[in-house]
Image (tube, rainbow over all chains, first blue to last red; front, side):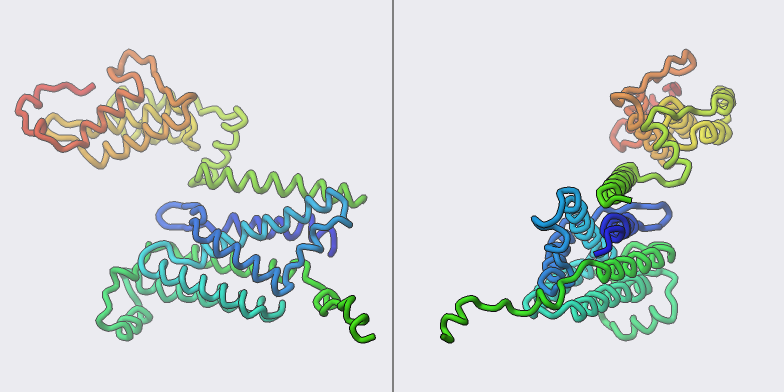
Amino acid sequence: MNRTREAFVLPLLFLTVALLGGVRVADRLVLLPPPLFTLVLAFLLVGVLVRSGALAPERLMSAARSPIANVSGAVVIVTAFVAATQAFNVAIPESGLPRLLFSVFLLVLLVNTLAASPDRVRVLRSVLVIFGSAFILKFIVLAALSDPAGGWLKRVLLAMLEGLTLGTLSQDLYQPVTGYIAFVTLTLFVGSLALLPSRTRRALEPRADPLRGELDR
Amino acid sequence: MRESNVRTIGLVLTVAYAVFIAWLYVRQPQTVAEMTGALSATVGAYSIDEGAFADGLRFFRGDQFDAARLAFERADPAHQDSRTQFYIAYSFYRQGWGRLYSDDALFTRGLEAVDRAVAVAPQGRVAVDDPDLQLRSADELKAELQAGLRRDASDLNPLKIFRQRK
């Protein structure tokens, strides 16, 4: 991998995601630290990335590299983990039933992806869909339901959710800029994941079994 | 450029950026002025506008509390000076104080200001040597503000009307 990408681009992109991931603008600016559960989700996501080959830790840290290169590689992995926690912090609602549902849904989805062991491209597509749908649900659907002024979307959703009390669904109301910042954050995050050093095709191929030749003979 | 140099510069930049982000999350600045003020206070380079502070003090002593707070805010836009924040809290106390009842909204804002004063003071101790004031420390002022916000049987004591503003 390009050393500039490893030393500068990836850590700084991931840290920017970590910075923007907690930004909530209401009547005042709040920087929200990630809840503990997002650490679990981020851990699973990193696991999924490694399993699929979207992240190849051996290309960032190995005995063949110099100590400073290994430290630099470790920084990429750590910042990727921190960015993942903040990306989930963006995606998960802050309170109530939606928070619980989103958390459980994301956990099941990541465990399922881990078990399915898809390849790099499929995992990146899956991550895009996960964060894209979470963004739409949180910043468009839930925000519309929580808006006391309401709008056409709220009326439509209320008609669809007839009989359901909104007390458990409504969220803290943020200014629209929060949604834009969240969109930029998630786009940066998914884009940065695509830049991670991936496992090469040769490494993905099954290794030749040294006993195979002996047995054939 | 040599590879080790590129990586070292990258590491230094990354660590500095990470420290800055952690600092932002801990301090939670609300404005650019607060952010730059807090940064300069961290390195001991923050100072208030003494002229605006003197204006604020003059307004405060003349019971023009709104004007006093505007001047104090101009003197300490980053909310990093414990003395100025103490006077802001005191202005809320004096403005909200009443013989029969106190203004809860003003007392609450006073509490916020006194908490800010304590947060930025060395060892959290704020003491102001001003003969015009009867409450000369953040502890006394905070206790007075909290007492004003408390609801208990002493609120019904008719002798309360003889108490004095401090």
